[in-house]
Image (cartoon, rainbow over all chains, first blue to last red; front, top):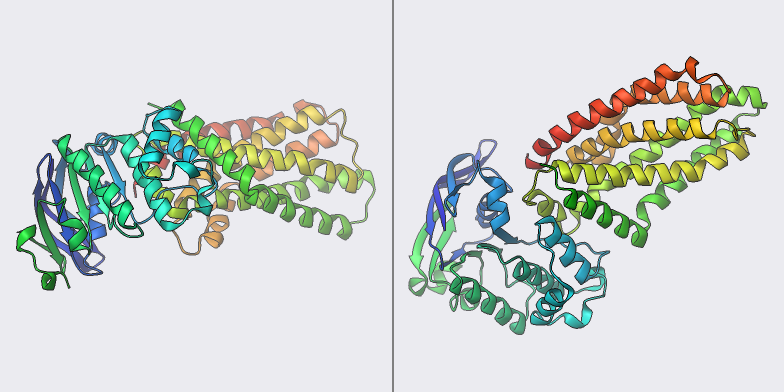
Amino acid sequence: MIACHGIGKSYGHFQVLHDVNLAIAEGECFALFGPNGSVKTTLLKILATLERPSTGHFEMLGMHGLKDREAIRANLMFLAHGTHLYDELNARENLAFALALRGHHPTDRDMKRALDRVAIGAFADMKVRHYSAGMKKRLALAKTMLAKPNVLLLDEPFTALDTAGTEILREYVRERLSDNGTVLLSTHDYDKTRPIAGRAGILQHGALQETAIEELKSDDLV
Amino acid sequence: MISFNVIRWIVWKDFVTELRSRETISSMVFFALIVILIFSFSFSMDQQAAREVIAGIMWVAFAFTGIIGLGKSFSTELQNDCLEALQMVPEAKGAIYLGKVAANFAFMFVVEILLFPMFVILFNLEVVEEISLLLLVFFLATVGLSAIGTLFSALTVQIRAREVMLPILLLPLVVPVMIAAVEATKGALNGDPPALYEQWLELLAIYDVVFTVVSFWMFEFVMDS
């Protein structure tokens, strides 16, 4: 689970996040909505241990977000705007490298299965520099699938994905939730998110307002 | 605890990407060739005079060539935000540092070995008997350059003017390496007994150990900041 306690973030004198309190239970998917510049990515980066909060702290899986960073990193995957892929490596090599750094050594069969699942198995030996944005997103998703994280942080996960890719992602999120995983995603796309998210929140002017996703109206998300 | 698995995979990744892109080594070799050619046409000298100045010319070429390679070491990690993935590796970051140092050392050493025959030909040097001592000097000095250079490459990678900042910050710190490398190279080229310049080799070895340990320790803070 994830528990944020009064998280704030400032850049110099400019405070971008104010006192964010949030609890996401195991087996729950929380959707974070908000207009451009509402620092959704900053909040995700704090939880991904890539940035430190200026105030407050968080816990993840019972571990302290600032003191147990390595242990938290071993249990989470962050599907970010950048795909964390090397253009000169092919899909298999990217998977092998990224997972090896996390201490996983998937077999060729595991990698093929993951690549087939995201429907890019036919391009497994092609350099990533020749991939489209959607294919890169699918490969990043395959990497996440092989890592089997307890916590999944997804930053605008539907961007660049077509309808089939969106369904693959949603199916994977459902699978993580059924395994008691915790998912936090930031998005602008209410329709694509509603089938998987149980709760939601709107981040506006650095403050988080929680709500049930059914109660959100499209006007709230403009 | 150092993860040798992480070191091995970082070296593998840097080698494979370099073999396929050839960006780093080709730009290093091209730059160094220009430097060597400019110096060779600027000076007209006999072999004795060449032995006196060639060491300095050689290490100017090697150091600036090395900085090109070091600058690319972490800037390639900005592609697709791969640096974030390295920051999120659930292991002590020192392993990433050692992997990067090993890869940077290999690229710089390969370029030095490729360029050295050019110096021999263009400056008419006779180095057959001194080759093992020269290789020792190259090895020790290149370890020092890559140890401190890798740390500063990581430190400056997120700075907008990193191409300028890396040499400005790095060159003052590698002055001891440069002086020791020039003196030891000059001694070896002159055929002096090693006892006359062994203190420079010792200085290089001490520098290597000290700066590798300090940089290894500091790398964790650089990656997390």
